Image (cartoon, rainbow, N blue to C red; front, side):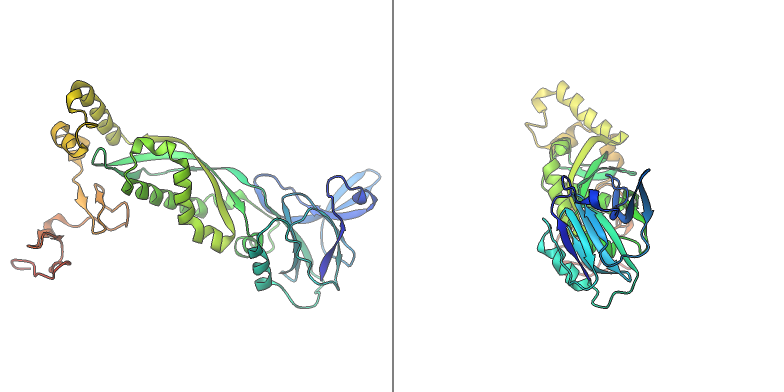
Length: 355
């Protein structure tokens, strides 16, 4: 079972004008990722669009630009086409696999999931949107931690913006994401789990940039670096498992929580009052020690060092997620390492005293 090209140009060709009925995609806009095919029937009163119940020998299909058509038999993929044009279905033909501009990985996916049986009489046509899906909104429900080496403090920020994706392996997307017997799939499916995965990757990207010494005030100008971090984080979750790639990210605004804002304002005020002791000329650790009052946000949150090496103020590590150790259990080993257990994790020395 396969399709045969009838005409190469889906835009200017006049072949469809000679057909009394043919198959096209259902409604497909920037919010639609997948839709079923519908049958167009020409009448004196205009075109009528009806659902498809069966695909017969000689059925005609029109594929528009930036679309991939999937031909299924009994729920399994038997052929696909990513090249715009007009095609006819022949039940006795071998799969054509018109790959268009898609990579070779799509052919590999097809060979893994293709159906080798005889036509079952329950053929269906699906269309996948290959355009860049833009303006997917995101926002942080809770503040994200960011340790700024300049302030030597754990700051908390909120941000929102938009990102865009593209389906680069539509057969894998069809297999792993599209619910069976679904009439269409919209970007609503990306609003819960996918958004949580995106925000988790964003927090990891911020933690990495914090370790690289990027100042928190420069995050807004680091769009390219943020995308690279997100790509590495989402490559396995989205690209390898679901055939989706992140294309771009636009961060609209970065804001601070009240305590972080108070710390930054205090730094600016002290820099104006004491220009000779500006933290740009002195290290930020000295600035925090000499300029932070006892009731400042820095002292309200006791800093603690996680086993992974990062400094934190919250109850959990911003990098690895470990819980803050119980301060009543802390003890310093002669080797210099701070521990919470009964034995030193570095040299094995027993905790002094009774336990």
